Structure formats: C-alpha cells, structure tokens
Amino acid sequence: MAGLRNRPEWQFFAVLPKADPVLATAWWLLLLLRGALPAVFAIAMGWLIGAVQHHDELAGPLTLMGTTFILLQVLTPVHQAVSANLGSRVAAWLNDELARACVEPPGIGHLEDPELMEDLTVAREFDRGQTGPPMYMNVDFTATSLVEMVGGIAAAVVLFGFSWWAPLVLVVAWSATHWLLRESGVWRDRNTSEVRSAQRHADYAYQLAVEPGAAKELRLFGLAGWAVERFTERRRRLFELQYQATRLRERPMIWSLLIVAVANGVVFWALGSAAVGGSLALDRLVVFAQVAVGVSSIAFGGLNWVLDGAAAPVVAVRKLKPAMAPAGALSDGAGPAWSGGGSSRGPVEIRIRELSFSYPRSERPVFDGLDLTIPAGSSLAVVGQNGAGKTTLAKLLCRLYDPGSGSIEVDGVDLRNLDVDGWRSRVAAVFQDFLRLELSLRDNVAPGGAPEADIVAALADAGAGDLADLETRLATGYEGGTDLSGGQWQRVALARALCAVRQGAGLVLLDEPTAQLDVRGEAAIFDRILTATRGVTTILVSHRFSTVRHADRICVLEHGRVVELGSHDELMALRGRYRTMFDLQAQRFTAEVDEEGMSYDTL
Ligand SMILES: Nc1ncnc2c1ncn2[C@@H]1O[C@H](COP(=O)(O)OP(=O)(O)OP(=O)(O)O)[C@@H](O)[C@H]1O
Image 1: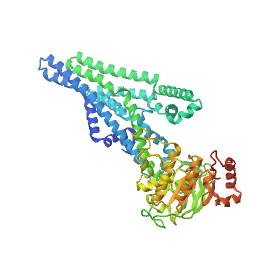
Image 2: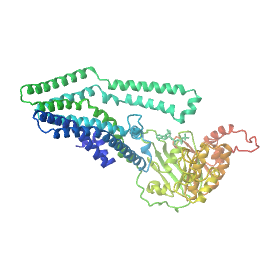
Image 3: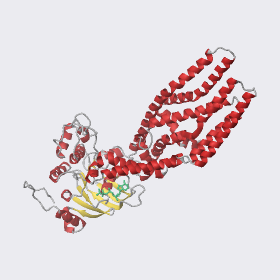
Image 4: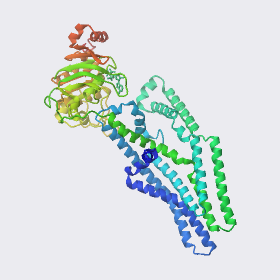
C-alpha cells in the first residue's frame, strides 16, 4: 500500500482533490461517464436493431441512442473546460506548496543545497511549458487517456455477455501494446539524463537569446548569431534524442501486432460462428462486435506517457517539502523575542569562538577555528580575497546558517539560544545581492513600516533624499513606476539598513555597500553612514580600502581565519597582508584632485 502511495501516478491523483475537491469530483464523474458512453451507445444500437426486427416500439432505443450521442458530443468540451480549470488549480496548489516549503525554514541551506537543485528546478519551472506541457494541458491529456481506458474496460465488461474468455483475450492482447511502447523506450528514454541535459542546454541558449540580461554582452562580443545558432543546434539535438526515444522499434511492434491480430481474429471468428450457428441474434452480434472493437481503446498506454509528465512536478514538490525543512532548519532558539544579555535597543557585543563552518555537501570548510571579538558600538571592516568567507560570516551573523562547531555569542549569549526572529529584528544588513522590491520607495526603505521622518532621514543619509517621491513604485510597467540605476538601488538598500538602525538595530552588516557608487558619491556617503551608525556595532565588508580605513578596526580573513587585526595605522605599521593590499590599490589612485579641483581619493 505504501509502495502504491509512493507511485508518481498515485501522488498526482491524490493532489487533484486537494487542489479543488468540487472540480476534482466533477472531473472524475465526467470521465467515468464519457468512458461508459460508447458501450451504452453499442447497447442502444443493439436494442434498436432488435426493436426493428421484432417490430417493437422504437422510441425507447432511439431516445437512448440520441441521448448518448448528444452526451458524447457535449460532455467532451465540458470535460475539457473542467480539466483546464482543475489543471490551473493544481498548478497553483503546487506553487503554493513550493513557496511555503521555500519560505518556511528559518535558514537558507535548503535553497543552496546542490542535492535539492534538480527537484527545485522541476518544481519551479513545470508550468512554463518549456520542459513539457503546462499543467492545465496535462490534466486534459490525462482525462482523454483515462476516458479511453475506461471506455476499453466498459466495452470489455459488456463483452462478458458474450463469453467469459473473449474480453480477457482482447484485454491481454491490447495491453501487450503497452509493452511495445515500453520496449521501444518511449517513457524510459524520454526522461534520460541525456535528454534532460539536452533540454537544459536548449533552454539556456534560448534564454540567452531572448532575455534582456544577456542582451548587452551578446551584442558587444558579437555573440548574437552564436546564441541563435547554439539554440538551434541544441534544440535539433534535443529533437533527435526525443525522436530516438519515441521511435517504435521493429521487434516489439511486430510481436504486439501479431498478438492483437490473432486475439481479434479468434474473438471475431467466435462471434461470427455463433451468429452463423444461430446462437447469437443480430442485435446481440451488433452490440458485441462494437464492444469487441471498443476494447482496443485501452491500447498503447498513452496514459502512462501523459502521467509521466503530469506527475513529475507533483513528485518533485512532494519530495522537496520534507527534504527542505531539515536542510533549512536551525537549532531551536529557546529564548524570548529578545533574550540577549544587553538591552533590547543599543549596540551588541559579538564574540566569535572557534567557529567552523562548511556549506551543505561541501567538503571544504569556509571557516576553521575563527576567533574574533567585536566590542559593542565599534566598527569592524573585514577584508580578504574573493572567496575568503566575508559574505559567509555575514550570513552566519544573521543566523541564516548555524555554525558547524564553535559559537557566535551576542552579549554573552550563544546565537543559537536566541529567538531567530527576535535576533533578526536587531540586525540591519545590506548584502551584495540586495533585495529590489517592486514596491513603493517607502516600502523599499521600510518593508515592515517605520515613521515617515525616519524613512526620509535614512534616505537623506544614504544620499537618496531626492531620488523619488516616497509613493513612487520602483519598477517600470506600473502607472507612474520607475526603475533605478544600480547605484541608485544601492542607495535605497543602504537607506533600508539605516532606517533599521533608527528603529533600534544593534548590529549593522554592510557587505560591499558602496560597490556600485561613483567615487564622489562613495566618499560623501561613507561619512554619512559612519555618522548614522556611530555607536552601533557595525561590520563592513569591502574591497575598497578608501572605505575600509575609516573603521575602528580592520580584520584580514584568509583560509577561514583572522590573519591580521588592528586599526588602519596599526596594520600599516605591521607591513603585512593589509599593507600589501592597501599599497597595491593606492598605486591605482594617484590622482587626488579631479578636474573641478576637488579631492575624492581618500586612500
Ligand atoms: N551557497 C554556497 N554553497 C557552497 N559554497 C559556497 C556557497 N556560497 C559561497 N560558497 C563558498 O564559500 C567560500 C566563501 O564564499 P563567500 O561568498 O563568503 O566569500 P567572500 O569573501 O564574500 O567573497 P567575495 O569577496 O567574492 O564576495 C567560497 O569558496 C565560495 O565558493
């Protein structure tokens, strides 16, 4: 039973009533009715012939035939409409499930776990129509295939009226055609890793060609023709593979044709001899001959093929739900909303002890015994080569991951013992890949709400005071909406953090907060950031030493450990890594005065 429940088809059918119980019931009823109608029509025809032969009343059989015929015509489009609606609801249900599974875990490990990526891609993209038909079509295809299956079974049931063996022979023979498709590899080969990989390549090349993100470089590097060529070639390869997969192979084809021909020959021969021998009247012969033909609609197993595509996203979503929860879990924070040692406002002291951390499924530790203390209210700049672990440190401080071993303490309390939401409400962060909400400027600066005076002041501190009206939506495509440049967006992200500081954040994390600002803007803004975050514990990640040097202390990260720690002057005097990096960058900043006679280079 558990095995049956785990089957993809079962999971697919189980989702239908969850998506919409009323539509699912209507869908099944219509399906059964449509499946049964051809057999009823055959019976009605036999009845009519019998009535003509015996000079009986024709109204009954004619009414039944007419009604069946009309129902056959009318129910098809009605069922299609129900299928389309049910399919859309199944897609919405799956999308909701996936959204919840992605959003509910407090950490983010489940979204960065390579083992979950394939299912996540299937679950995310199933309704875009690129890897297969969208769900509303899949439900319709499933309905059509099931109607045929039910039709074949109904015909076989009626054929029992002739003999017990005839329907069995025909059902077995026509079922052999399923084996034909399976042996031809239709289902198996269509979903091989080679086909999936070809599909991925074709999709990628297509996206390169049609999406605006790649448009600039494609043109600049003369790659436009290459992208189209690549797409065409990859797609051709995909079609070739799909053709190979769906091509019927000779041997199983000959065998199943033979079986079907023999079985039908035997049954029709028996029907014929019974009729000639006088044991089967014309009216019954007509019925049984029709249903004997009708059994053929169970042939070829199109249903399996259709269900394969329809069930894949259901299986992926249902698999992801239980897999994501532990991957994104954090150890339980036992404390109340804020259970740090200090007050619920004001700066916090951070103490990192023997911290080790590796990303999920990664052998290589990012940190291996990191020790670092950041006194309350001080600022610390973190520098180091690409990949040194600066962003990872910020993620750990936001408690998007828990450490592998060691600890991060806030005012003497292990971060794992703090309530996650309570802690996060005390952290203001700007990440390199910061959030750009398609909402008003006001909501971008204060997504959780804040007094207007704080929003306006935060925008001014971030140098975005005159960017736009607070109610302007920061996205094109909306009435009065506008998009911003990269640097302008960065100012909005900074304003969001600075607004949170005004709301009482105790830790500010700035990961490359001025990377997209022009030099003039950076120098001006950085002074304002320092003023606005004065007295708040601030961690600044930056490759710009003009920014870094203003921090109270600077730490150089290398191979998961702190290799240098001190003020700018102390580290310069040390003549170590920091000095080398600083001097290298300083050589590129020789011009200290611009054409307007103003000095911006603060190195
Ligand atoms: N989601 C992830 N899964 C696996 N490994 C990751 C992930 N994110 C980062 N890493 C790895 O962890 C290491 C540290 O990455 P991190 O982003 O913290 O570096 P960084 O110092 O911020 O680099 P940069 O200066 O380029 O921003 C790198 O080797 C990186 O490849």
